[in-house]
Image (cartoon, rainbow, N blue to C red; front, side, top):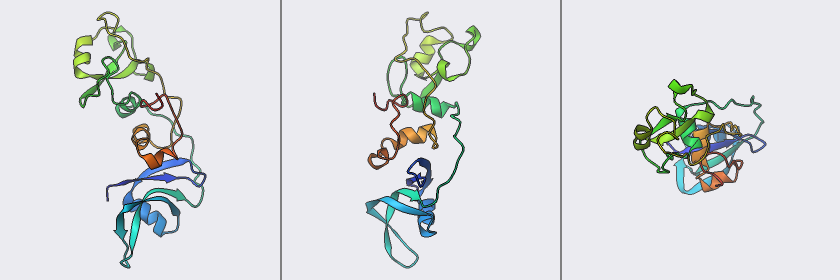
Length: 179
């Protein structure tokens, strides 16, 4: 039961991603309705009935939440850059975070100065600016404009689910979406 389920607010706003067990409990308690289910998978109820496993559920009552703050983290930077090195363009498993302007040259740890980088490019660049070593960024780093209620990396991963895409707002400056 490790499958993830998209949870929508009553106004269809993406609210959360939860595990399958939690989604089934929400539906069973009458707090949510199943919008999409996976027909090829079923879950047995306590009464022995076979129920389709939900992929997207919508809450019956509106949950008011404050607008979330987009936190700067390694995962958020990787998601923004679509898990791709911003110097050579490879999608490596072993990515690091690179300060475009190194800290010792006055570069800080903010969205506009951090990029995903493969180990080879990070070693080549070292503590120099990209111009000094003849490297060029594929795209300039910037703070994403959209702040989803779900975490940025869950948003990018969720955009790969065909059913979830119908409910996630289109946001083109993160994770290579719409590019």
